[in-house]
Image (cartoon, rainbow, N blue to C red; front, side, top):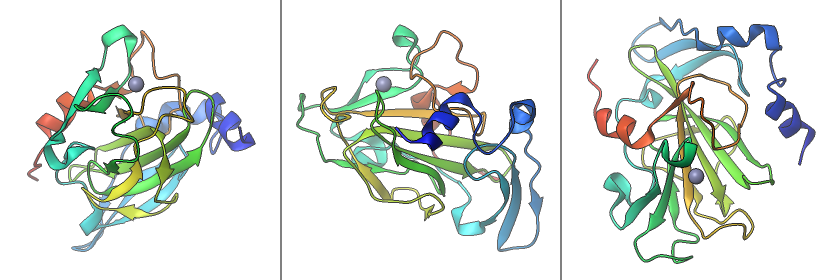
Amino acid sequence: MTIRYILYSLGLAWTCLCCRNEAAEKTPTVLGADTVTTEVKSGPLASTITFPKPYIATAFDFPVGKPNAKGYYNAQGFGLNYHLGDDWNAVTGGNSDLGDPIYSIANGQVNFAEDIGAGWGKVVQVLHQMPDGEQYESLYAHCDSILVQTGDWVKRGQQIATIGNADGQYYAHLHLEIRDSIGMPIGGGYAADTSGYLDPTRFIRTHRVISN
Ligand SMILES: [Zn+2]
């Protein structure tokens, strides 16, 4: 467990606690045809980011069996047992999906990619900038391997990791979260209070193609 993760868990990394209420402020400025600048006031990449237009999120796919999760099922949906995400498994069961590809659900920028151990294992998080200025984060946990680094630009459907079991703690599966509060701590994966977390399957289904 790194010091960075401990700080991240406490919500102390990259920003002070008194600033966290500003995390949800999103004030993009359209600079021209090719880029959009946006404020990210909290989280690993807290700064003004210039998003190249090809990396604005204009459509969302499922993170496994792309684009429609073919061959996979959601074993524990959002809200079940206070679950804050979806658990994607191959229909073939057990560890048969160990090492299978995990794809970014949309265009964006990787803002976290580390092995943080504990119940999480290897985690990737991607920041998505929407055409209307909204921002979301997608988080992919328990990975077997990570194929991207913090700061990388990724496209929808690009492989970013492989399905893992968090060093043998579970049967292999992908824990996917979607967050609408940017820069929250990693959290615990389960909570009665779902503020800042969205139902991933519902979100993806309602954002397959975004018109602007
Ligand atoms: Zn889970």
